[in-house]
Length: 99
Image 1: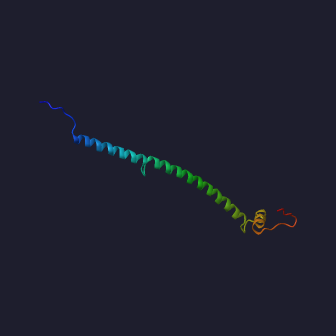
Image 2: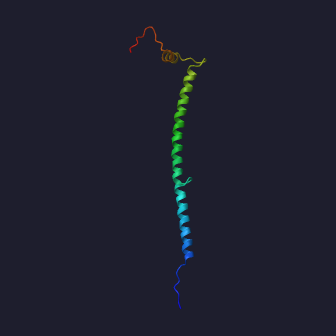
């Protein structure tokens, strides 16, 4: 008697489990917390934060310049005049205010 040899249930279960594990690890490598998509999101966030840092550095440099120009050792009279006009609402005697 010859019996046809067909794969048993054990082989089917082994390949099913192996396939499911492969699918799971592939999904985790692409979509997971440490996957490719998360890496792209982190890179985009890093670029946005770098742009913000450059903008803030420029603002700090501008504020340091204004602070230095109003210090006791270096007094910029034009800047002092501008600050007095904006903060105190002062005008000179030869100016006309139009509202």
